[in-house]
Image (cartoon, rainbow, N blue to C red; front, side, top):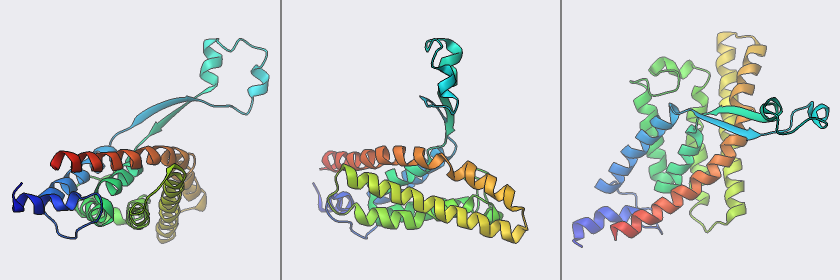
Length: 225
């Protein structure tokens, strides 16, 4: 292994986060921005069982009947953007994770890479606050991922990170609504749709994303060695 190659691979050391931007980190940062764009426009259809409010009325009926099965099945269309953010920070670490998010935001100021488009005017969109909230969430999560973590701590880390994004995103939404003099019932509806049950899905998939990011980071280090 040459000294030049060693310098390029230093950024993928499992212990330590060099500040230098090398060829390896530049490629991974650009790929991470691409991953985030793909996740933004990816919609997953999730079907899972749930208990409706009128479940008692169906206790005497055949649970295998098609209509009963559909009544006890929840269909949710999910966009995995937030889990991808935490995958990136688990893969690249705090410093390069933030660089990736800043690259994504900068790109969105010129190209329609956000969910509802792009451009400078997107800063006044209701959902822009969620994107800005990625930065403090990465700072928090990236700092904690430096230390040894177990399953419960990763769940706590994912929960706090996801909740912080939704809180900051909701506050930004209220701020934009105030500037636009929008009715509060409209804003409340937006907050419920963006930060209602979505939080539970985000936490679940974020835990998975953090593990996948850590495993991918280790794999890259093994392959490059």
